[in-house]
Length: 172
Image: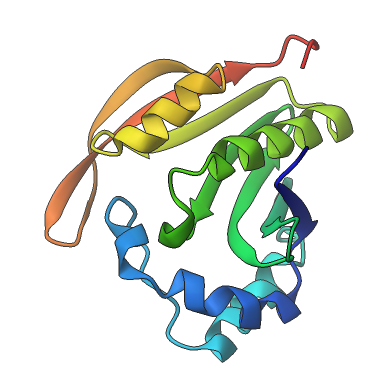
């Protein structure tokens, strides 16, 4: 039984998402900051729900992760599709870490992009210090393809990143 389900992101989801996205603990390994207001988050969701910029060949897919029991928002997943490749990411609210939600949500995300799109390769980038995300990607069958030294500088320190890759074999 699925403890969570994904719904397509809508601007109206900003109210449900703001509190969870305001938790500073979730931003240790990413260069983003919490949203400044529910209104600013809603504006961002208007932009994201457009599905991509008209001047590119990217398709943006964004989902809210909700608990089945009470429909509470617990995070999001996203995929940027370009041709036969996708770049994925996720964000689980800290109060819901270590409950298997990320694994289940990313499994659903991968199923969606493989079943509904002609994706053959999925990539993910993760800070080398983020042991939980590294373990998740390995659990999902991703392989480490390279290390990117000095990938970013944020919150006062240099971030090195790993690139992970999953090739779709059609058997998911």
